[in-house]
Length: 224
Image 1 (cartoon, rainbow, N blue to C red):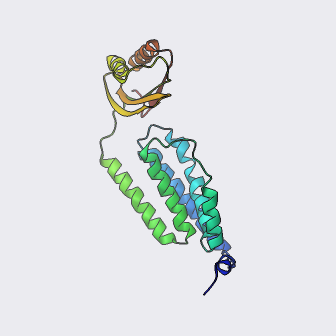
Image 2: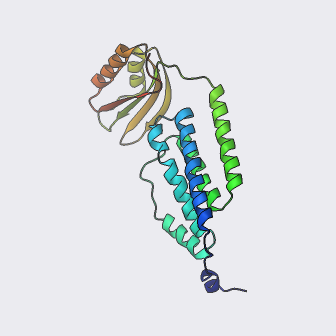
Image 3: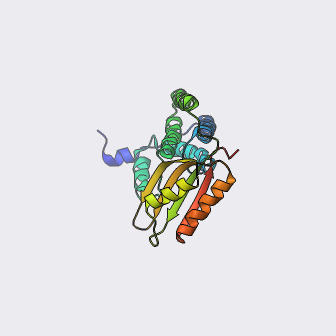
């Protein structure tokens, strides 16, 4: 029976360079495919193109890490210690973002473990389900924009007042997200505007109601 020191001292087997390169290329290709599907079918309010550009890096980095540590207990323990000091400074506000990030990490895990066929089938299957479900769902109104209203701790308007101001200068709206914290408030709507004049009027009304307020309009498909 091996002692702990003997287990930790086990030599790390050599990594096949051709296999490593193949896995790296597959990780890049699959992660890029995930990014394309996210940009095309995603519904999150963030800049999807900006986030999707990082999927390839996340997938390839995960694959490299798993390839290095998978056959060494000592390296695995070192990875656990290293990850324990990592802190995310930017919160993931959209569950959809987290789902795509997990899928990208799964690509790295699968290819790092040399499970190429299973990883490819699994990822393609998940992306096919996403494309099919989003393709059959109702498309958003082409005249709709995502409106994000942010406020600080002072001169804060109520959710009812913000909604009232937006409704007065739009043809319809749906509340998408409401984040209320001690230091800031953020409200997101899907708003339907008939033309750019309605948009400008809504923007002016919101800014006139409070000086400590930020207004962002995120284009979905553009106003026709």
